[in-house]
Image (cartoon, rainbow, N blue to C red; front, side, top):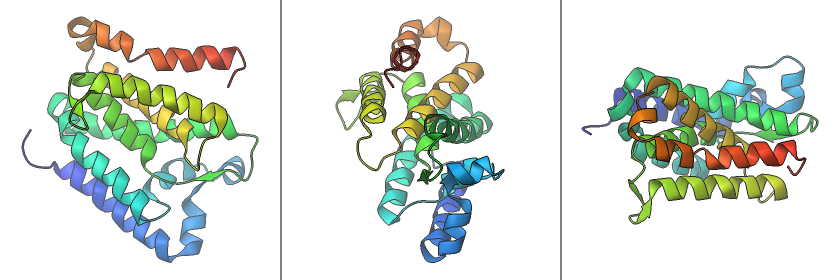
Length: 211
């Protein structure tokens, strides 16, 4: 899959520079983080800007390393422009899902590229479902299990983790990849259906008032 794409380098650099600014400038961090109350007051830019801020260096490194490992696989199959669409679309959908589930919690705040990165990871699994994660777990198994865990985390408010943003980002990666690469419906329909299972589970649980 060749050398690291310029698009990937730019995204990693933007995350690093903006996050570093946030680490050292409390006012900047507070101004651009995701916050339900601020968004309700009209600061919708936070839906996007929060995806380039991180809570600390560990948070930043984890997200950027994950992006580094999976970005080129997605670019190889869909091209750089579509990769960028998937990244930005997943970022925004992740934030919107967080907003939907926390819209009545005016103090709810979040930061991080996790939604966008999860979108890229799920896109990578969709285009190459038998890829190995952690060296031995088939990609489609990991993807389904992770999203089912995200549903569990959303329902039980586990940890200081934006499970809803992760899930929304994965939905973005899944949906946009199918839009830009509809041939997957013909070449790998079984995996397309299997990877939709957690999305259907969340929809049903939400309709039943279980989450």
